[in-house]
Image (cartoon, rainbow over all chains, first blue to last red; front, side, top):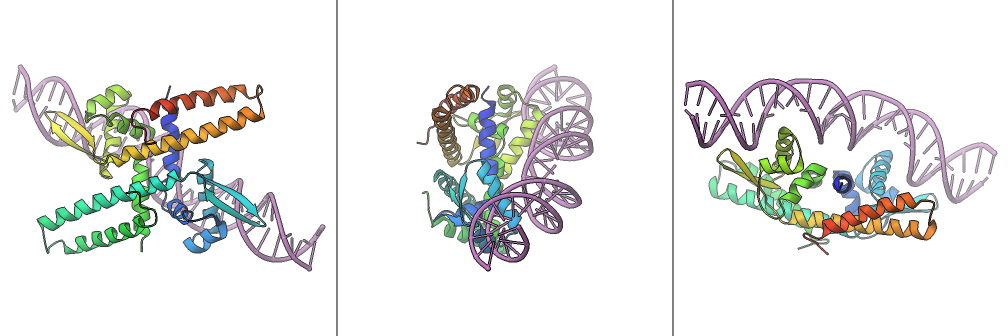
Length: 134
Length: 134
DNA sequence: TTATTGTATTACAATATTATAATATTCTTG
DNA sequence: CAAGAATATTATAATATTGTAATACAATAA
């Protein structure tokens, strides 16, 4: 009976679950934006951006209004950013504890892998800044 | 350069984005559980449950330990539940405002659709109760 | 050891998602 | 109205995800 609710939640999550769509949403964190900005800033094909926006719109995650020939998009629910922030936190924790494991077990041998994680961690911290949920 | 971070986030979200996996996680909200419980309670094929658990495990969303021939799973990051709760909130808001629109515009004609949403809303409220994030 | 129980893995067909390319639509300007 | 700019839609081929069925593996019991 409640199966449809789980389907709804899954559909919502699926709409968020794409690198380009997350990037689009992050760009909408500060303010509403024209489609042309996404194409430009994110370096994506026009039709690709349109399709990704359609996915987000279908789930009512974003809404749009026309302004001349331009279309301006905005995020409907600020909770979306909290969700993204929460994921940041989890990933940060994960990479951090993975790092600790590598640090304590092998010092020099896997140095390459450690550095790789270091950059990921730095990136995560950076991404955390705008609207940190912690 | 930071493209991989968005990919990581997308992968994380993708792991959550399936009705059965969400159901599994909701079952893990209260306490850790044996695989056999999922098969039984969620009425899913054994191999299907195993595959879904593998997806969650790959993202380090859950971890497991053996106990005899059984395997017990638990959720690693409580933030996962906060994410699910947040989605509940958003969906609840969405259905609610959709309802309001239908109510004010047409009273009898689309009655069927209204009732449909009503049941969804009731279900959402129910699902909100266990660990409401609002 | 063999048999049994509980999980995991693999194979595979069906379906869904994706990026690209081509076309269509909408709005503005002339 | 025609032309151009911005966006949306459609078609399609490549890839990914999914559920089922079959098989493999691990722990215990006999």
